[in-house]
Length: 73
Image (tube, rainbow, N blue to C red; front, side, top):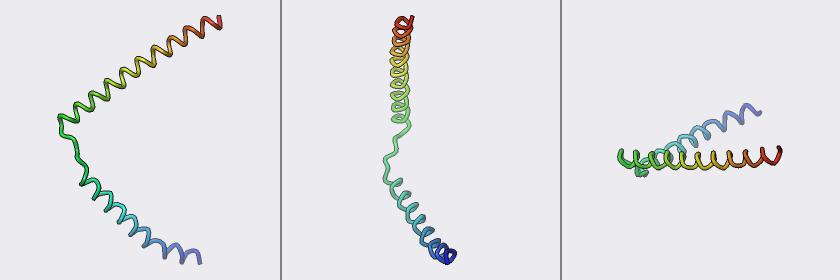
């Protein structure tokens, strides 16, 4: 009985997957993709931001490490 149910559900799942992928492809066609100059600019902004945040976290971590080591002796 369960084998019959699994076979009956398979075409529905395959069709649902096809419909989903068609929808995804349709939405990807609507996306405004950045040109090369924008992509380089956005990448640079992200890398600089990550570097700044990393340095800030390193400073805080080092400061807290010093404070804790002085407290603990």
